[in-house]
Length: 318
Length: 318
Image (cartoon, rainbow over all chains, first blue to last red):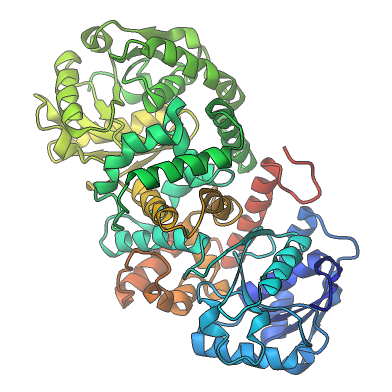
């Protein structure tokens, strides 16, 4: 790895659609020189529109020193785009064959040792790095839409990826202002996408069967569990449904519901090992906070989110 | 129905655990006289503790005129609790046989025509109203934890429930400051719980298989999709992943992912009818807002939520 993660100043974004363009906006706002490339004829114009539309939000969010939308350059060719890159983010369409070939081309055009990350929504890098000459520097850096606002990046390598490249990428993304989960092993869909994909598939089943409308599905989340999930994850919020007994009591009480047809997804067997793993995991996540502390935190958070989104009763809506 | 929904002043809460106690706190804060009953010996003390712990939050949220924690009375018997009720909310433990018997008892003790709602997390009322003499006034009013902060209530009757009782309950909950989804048909788990249960089961599978830790699961939501779901539902946010093409483009692009093993839940067939239903549903939910409007709204919302929860880069954390 030529450049230490926090010394990187030039990044290349290949693919300038919604995700690739969002990465461009993010890196510009964090003060990088960004080179973009996308073979679509209207790509430069669309990218400029996306960056211009995002810039007021990025300004509200707080720009890094020296950040400017003028530090974006659109390259004429893939080779030109990669020639001086210190980091490459690939965000091409979600097609395995295309990703395989493109990653091999990027690998051939990018200076030795420079890390190349794919924004793929769920393909394992092991399946994508098959054609590249230097697979050891290819890894997944999976963002959420829009990458310039949602902090999460899931970082995971493939079977032929060097551990040092994964560590470099995690540190680089953190330096670039992202919130990183570094996964120890490949899992199709990674973590967050598996969770939201389960929810999404259930939603599609409901619409397909006429059980709920799109509006009801969206309202059921924004007026319900979505308010908690903005700041406290599903495990810790469910622990609070167990009252003073926490996750242990919650699982003992609601465990039988796992046999109920409350979703089309079959639940795992709630054996002692899983119960104890959930309880221990929640205790670890609570990091010393008592149930009462967490309840107070959740309540404060929900009120703050309701206020921030203009939904406090009696206050004018935003 | 004796009392018009917005004239109700006395409500009875049966079951004073986390959910029942949360309902008590909500109704007190909205200015009702609340009578509670729970057979557990330590219930009065636990309930008082819960209300006291919630009251500062409820005060921040804004109390209704005349609201006071002193307007709570703990009844000695179920019969006494229900004798003068204008509305009854049942929040007993999630056991079908127990709910069946309890609802029959509540029905016998409550004045004629007064609506009795169950907080059940997912049992259909058809299965719970079997033993009651007046099943026509029994329905589900399913809240989210904590009921005093999360607006959503899902209202749905059983086969033997009167349509007028369902309508009365929906109007009553709205008058009591809740956000109501009135379901046309019974569905195990209702809507929001089916969605969060799918996500939850996938999370349990991941922990059971050592694929992710509790902390990673929680972080993947709070740093990722959870930030959007606090104010924009999964359908509309996914529509924005389609860029200027919206939900149609998103489904055409990511549709093949539905065949990928990105969750253990099998997806429905994405045929023309489902595709068109999703596109039409999103257009309806957008209610005239363009994709650019929605992107601006999402961006503003995410920034507001990040700021409200102390996570704007460069700002001190809350």
